[in-house]
Image (cartoon, rainbow, N blue to C red; front, side):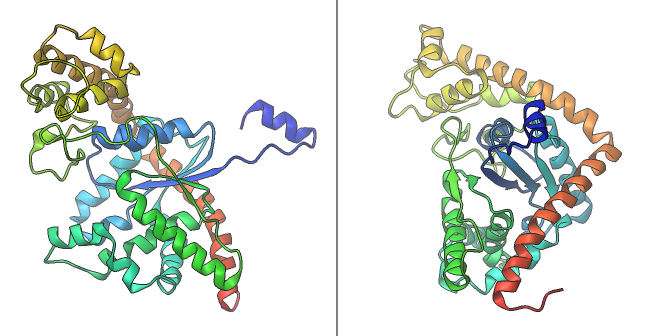
Length: 345
């Protein structure tokens, strides 16, 4: 808490309420450059201006079968990596979703206020059903309702989203409106927060698609924890075009993507990058982009190595945050249950 807020509270003045943001990322085992630029780095920037609540969405992860040992490791590594990227538990609440029981409880209640047709229209359900045809489980179908519970539990004003999450946020808004319409105002109806810069880093091999670790071609994506030589190799193999001119343009998806990445990690504008590489070939540009990315992730990798080796510190952080998250979310859950008509605990 800043000295300014402490002093104002001591004098009896109430500090202006910051808008609350909620966001969560699954512990996939690999955080890509796209995840970092599009989500994690923006989380870090938001902490000074908003009341931030973040989570590792480990409940969502089991819609796909997980190896228990690898899953446990991925959860801890994701938590450590988010801290390494700059999530500050002195500024924000950052917990493991499975440690806060209210998420699963509210999700069940909201399932009963969500229409089957709404869930069946979710494009990610259709995509994942195709990819995991041998395990089209009920959780895969209803996890957007759990996502709605994640958000609504904390009365979030804003939810950072990419283009592929707009549909899920709209469902959360619809559920909140429906519940509020029946029982009176219970949930804040959240708005989306869409970052203006670096929201969608594209595949290095097919720059018409989003960068994703699920891509079968390992050269298509860069992981935050990739070794420098691996990062360099992947960028050198990045798909470009035959024009050999570093500039933004139609039909230049590969170069547009590389310029976007360079802009995201250096803060330079497209125009500055174009001027800097005027007369230079794609080979030089690919190396420069790779070097910029390597320098961006180097301090993150160093902090991650220290954090993942200190399990006691990690446990202290996620337990403390889970206690705070439970306290906040329990109030919302109790309010919703009372509205429905449940007997108080």
